[in-house]
Each structure stands twice: as structure tokens, then as C-alpha cells.
Amino acid sequence: MSTIPISKEGFAKIKAELASLKKERPEVIKAIAEAREEGDLKENGGYHAARERQGMLEAKINYIESRIPQFNVVDMTTLGGEKITFGATVTLEDIDTGAEKTYTIMGPDESDFKKGIISIESPVGKALLGKIEGDEVVVNAPKGKIEYGIVSVIFNGPIS
Image (cartoon, rainbow, N blue to C red; front, side):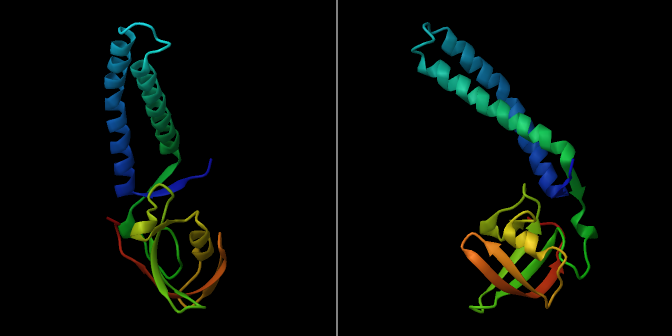
């Protein structure tokens, strides 16, 4: 089983989400029981909606619980160096356009493209791992190959 890197903060969020989902269980069970009391289950929209909600809730709980043992919780304050690894904030320059982009490389459970946080499993993340400032990389993106120059690599600590 491979491990999935995650920050302490990200792991805490996942655990909080799991606790919140588990707190919903009694509400869903109650909604199913109340809907069942309404009679004919074949035409009982409330019952079917509650059962569907229960299925989605249990699936999410099972998914999170299955991932927790795979997490490698990383203390972001201990990261550093020249090479791009999990936790690095990297500024890239598109070789063709000169446009700069800055990304922080995190695990898949913490990625948020709108905030500039990309997964180590994304095409850009994979291309950058192990590289250093000054290197050039070719990213096999869905829209084709993109060449980037690595402008800077820094380690900032926890991501908010």
C-alpha cells in the first residue's frame, strides 16, 4: 500500500469531516424511520430520498476511513531544500508566453487549483517533483505539452 502525503492541517480537516459525517448518521436514520411510518414505501419520495442520503453518507465515511491508514502526515515546518517535493511552493514561467504561475505542491486530498494548490499526482506536480530552480520541465497537460522554466522553489510551512 502506498502512502499519501498530507499536512497536519489537512489531516485535521479530514478527521473533522469524518466526525461531522458520523454525527449525521442518527439524523438520517431518524429521517428513514419517519418516512417509513408514512406508509407505502414504493411511492414514498421522502423514504427514498433519506435512503439515498444514507447511501451517500456511508460511502463518504467508508472512503475517508479507507484513506486514513494510507496518509503520511507531514510536519510542513520540517520541509526544505532545493529539490521540489511535497510542500514546495514553486513559481513557473511558461516558456512560450512568459506568463508566471505559482503553485504549492500538496497531496491529492488538499489540492485546490483556485488557491494555487496542486496535487503531487497532477501532471504539473509529477513533472516538477525532484527538479530544482533553473530547471525546465515539459508538462503533458490535457491541452498538450507545455514547457515551463522553474523560477523559484521555496518552503513556506503550513498552507492555510
